[in-house]
View 1 (cartoon, rainbow, N blue to C red):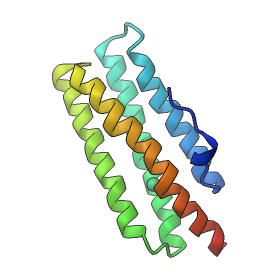
View 2: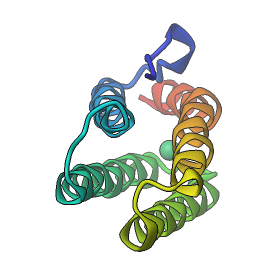
View 3: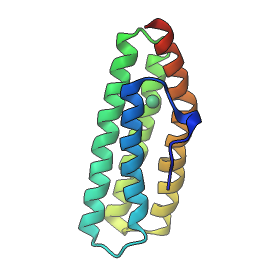
Length: 133
Ligand SMILES: [Fe+2]
């Protein structure tokens, strides 16, 4: 389970609200392991998370562009890497189900990455965004 700690607060209301939703959806995926559910249900939960990741990144990038954030391109490229990793995770699930590799990648590339990203990269953008408002 992930919890949004104080040091993950970006200070931009829209982004913080979306991070909460994102963490809720990530936790839904993490909770799947504990339940006996069908492959289709897992697939659907992964799809919901994937859709939300794309929406959230798009909204965050729009705020960056609109505020003239100097690190916009770089930040966007970080988001793209994550989207690629997520696509790989879904592929792994589609071919091998909830394999050991799937669980490992989910925890490392997806969960730990987003926590680090919010804490450093997004918080940095939040400081910039508030300074130009
Ligand atoms: Fe971000």
